[in-house]
Image 1 (cartoon, helix red, strand yellow):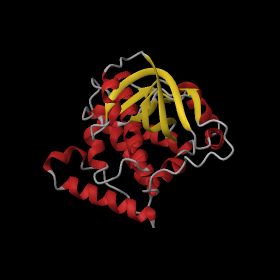
Image 2 (tube, rainbow, N blue to C red):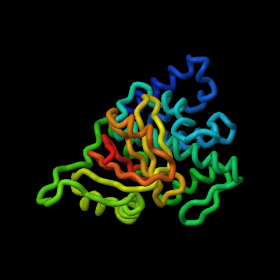
Image 3 (cartoon, rainbow, N blue to C red):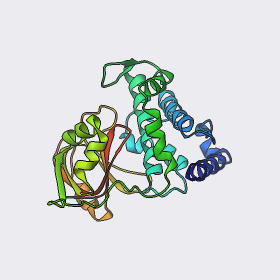
Image 4 (cartoon, rainbow, N blue to C red):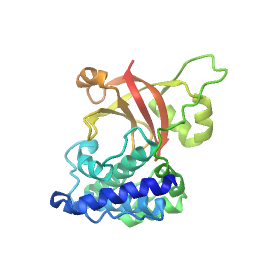
Length: 258
């Protein structure tokens, strides 16, 4: 039932886009009502192609570059839900691959696979068996519940670096969730960019082990003034109420600078 609800919402979003002349450049992003995996695949491929065509710009931070597409495909969605995060990261990853191919002629994955086209990228995702896990987030419109109570935990904060956190999740997501066990997560890392999402909320990206998707931290409104003073390459520490692992990188929610 949740799958039907979310995909019906996405269908309504695309119908509205089709009736909006300003959205015609994204009109080919049509949903697949009976398959979340097909929808995510379509979203990957379409945003990758948009980047190749220049509709997603390469000369601005990627969060800003994808803001127009993201605003349209998430219209009416609660950004605190797993479904929103899944769509956001699908758009970002597709755009990042497309921009890399446009600029360099190819993009290289962490396991040294060279990808020259958007369909090749989608085939890579499918061959690695990653699509079911990615699409699973689309079927959950509720707020993420990964942060369960930390029974028996002697500390209220799990402290780590952005690279260590990404490596821990990459090795074993289940074990990583158990190790964090619902605690707040304090992450230290090097600032890759300071952006805003389409709602105007601050998003800080810290470099990790993923060339495509750095660790992403959604900041509280109270942190805007501190974010304004950050610079790329600076080391900072961020404390998040919730942590998830989406599409190959850590994603923090309700975060503050520590």
